[in-house]
Image 1 (cartoon, helix red, strand yellow):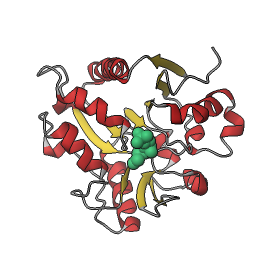
Image 2: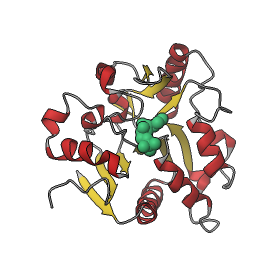
Image 3: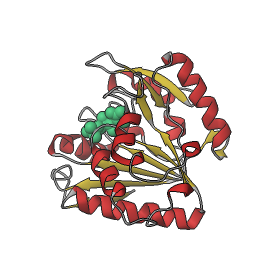
Image 4: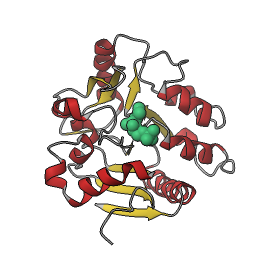
Length: 239
Ligand code: 6PG
């Protein structure tokens, strides 16, 4: 496990982007599962204003780690957030964007997206394997849309599951743990003081944390795991 701590999210964005560019140069074309929520907004804004050609957007096929079960025009949509902060500014070919269709019935969409992953991605032991898995972490220790109260969903035998937000009851579609842990490069991008206690628990007490927090179950089978943290999110870690 690699841990990198950054003074600001701007520094984090810069180093993460360099890592993504390295992976693209090694592989030629890459599959990326994007995270949602607010943390990636800053990264997408940074990407949206990079000099033309700095990232070969046509070399990236974009997927999502999770989506809220709302239309793509809804302010809650991770796709909409990504479109407004990234796709509206950079030349990603439409055929390279594979959104989770939040407007569909959750169960049907989990099946459809899971089947699509099996067709579009390389597989490792039959499990779709992303080149890059971007993850955030909620202050309750959830990741993607696997929440603590539904931690059993992590072990679903399928590629995707349906989930329910514990506070709002909002339905979600999420990658399952088997797909997340099959990724070749898993990056947690976690910023903000409100994440600090879970970051400490998960990094310093992984066995205990794994009983409670889905984010602690992110243990790639053979891929790399990198925590990219800002100083606020890492402030409780042992020095
Ligand atoms: C989502 C995300 C979710 C997110 C965490 C952290 O759809 O909300 O995929 O897993 O990464 O909730 O969200 P913030 O970046 O907003 O703190």
